[in-house]
Image (tube, rainbow, N blue to C red):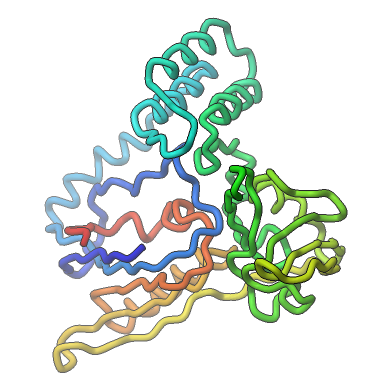
Length: 321
């Protein structure tokens, strides 16, 4: 995937104008362990101070309005509607909106008493699509998955369908000199079992949960090296492996007329948010009016979560190339 977001810049005013946040999909195509190769170019919104200050009061009124509570039935119907509007069947299982409509009527014919029951219904409903990339995460699962370093062994997994359509898991990204790498796990290895439990058919999230544990404890991972390599059981000690993934510098363009802050984000781990904000503030203090966010060869993680906070969504994007 390759792309750049380009925008025009102006110095930031004292109060911020109203700009929409980047959308965060609820169900479709959650990214876990996705290898990224794209960049962003962005800056402060070009809005006059008078226009900005006129926008402040409506924003405050909106923030003070309590959001409506979504019912259990409403949550299920929202998930159903997203699939109905956007799902593209590329597998061997034939999908039709008529069949999907019948499923909605059957599911919503009875009252849904609890939130956990609604979550279970959504997961069962999505499993009928036979699409490993369309799934639902509960708030707790979403929160855990937002932490790249949740496994504590320094690996990122991707799901790969085999010739029978079953899922197998490969190591997509690995932290150099991290626990798994030091123990002998390599990028491209297939994960066969965790603590003697076979993982064939399990999702990357499920296996990440098996790998997770208290800092300092051990987990045994059975891996197959490469396509035709040997099978090996490797004991890995869990560690907190989060390191700063942010590297930045100031570049001068147009004979010093334009200052550009270059930021390289190597992965979405627990330090990404804090260190990205620090880098942007320091570059801004150094005079940067443009920013380039380089995500090439990023090890992956949850892209939606990576951008669902200040300062990213306050910037005005003029064009997408």
